[in-house]
Image (tube, rainbow, N blue to C red; front, side, top):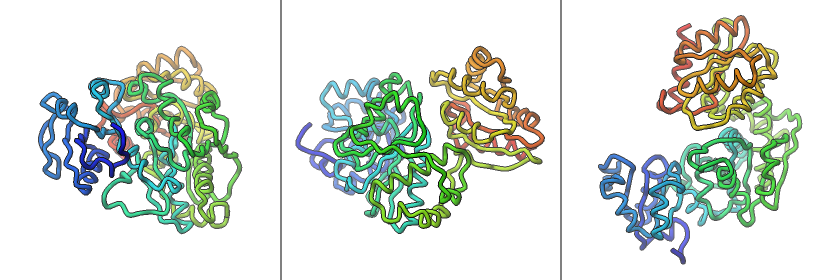
Length: 432
């Protein structure tokens, strides 16, 4: 299809919405507000959407409906590299994402997309708090929170959009600023490999007119793929910054997230973003996000920290590094996505016997084997469940260490999501 762009351009076309989660539901509401009645299709259960729109399952007439469409707005979790997405594309149906369509019509000079393997949620939330404290009317959303194309979303001075690799793949029009926090293995199944993951994630940086802001400190992977960061790159210097004290964050990596967030506002031309006194005042309004290196309590002098949203190696090593000199019982493991845990073993070797690794189902045995083979100095024990790992971790961390849930893997399978995993962790702490 040619001759149209953006959500506003869908009027008069046959439109499908594939997947009705957070983004899909937002797309349905936006299309309804624009006078477009799409086909709603989900993978399995047929029925009706909350608004009463007929919803078909893929294998119950849904695929045929989508093949009859001019454009299909798909949910981010649907990989374009898998069937039946490839069948739709081969049939000439345009597969689009809600964020990509929104950006085609958005006031791009006021938009920043923050991405990276880890740290993007924290950096986005910090940027939002700072901007509000500096007097800006800010929309913070995307992969975190609401979709900016919700029909009731009011116009804003700035749009700070956390952008996943899934969403980045579907973006064709770049924002004014793209910030990249970090780069390491993630979502390999969806992207069909690491090289494709990197290409999709960093494709945001190479859109015309984009300025790329890169996190401080040398990230070997970002250096390796520097040619994909675009022609206009602003590298953030890692410096001590007293204004960040009011954020209440744990760990050196979160200082880097804060410096990156501030540089995003500078790149967008936000007044006061270079004023340390104004930034210090704005920082006090920041509320730390849940399950991102969050202190949840103590048993005696042993501290319990929830980092349940850590789903790969990079943030887990950063989390351990946030507690220098202390004994750390590290709880790792979850859904197996084929990630290589050799870098985790190599990183943990530096801590010697100060760390006890307690592995969890489902991929816990594979993690344990990797650590034993590469870093035999590191203590490893396999746990059957999270509650028993918490009890063992507390015994190891006493008298004044840390029990750290930083799984380096998703929660799905054993738990509904990261939040349920965090709840079980906290409940096990309280049971002590």
